[in-house]
Length: 69
Image 1 (cartoon, rainbow, N blue to C red):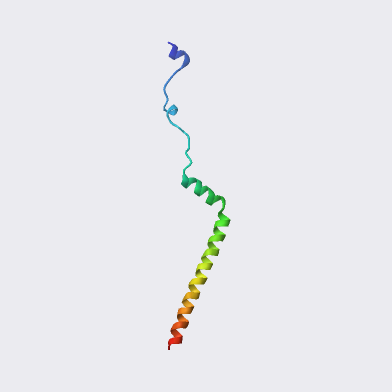
Image 2 (cartoon, helix red, strand yellow):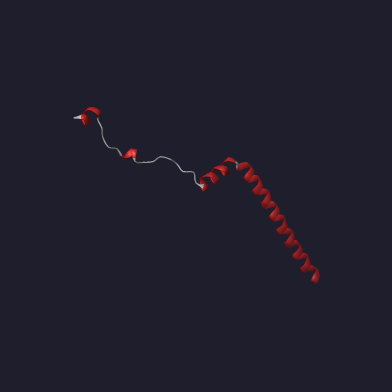
């Protein structure tokens, strides 16, 4: 009779823990999304520096080959 009065029942909602755990990857992705401009600018600069050294190296190889003949 008391159950009908208070309308007590069982629900699975009480067992589910909705606490979100911050993982390392999610915090890393949040930092990346927050600093997109800085990341893109630094990656473009690093790509240009790497390409510059690569092209200088190839040019030096071509010069060495042409000097040997």
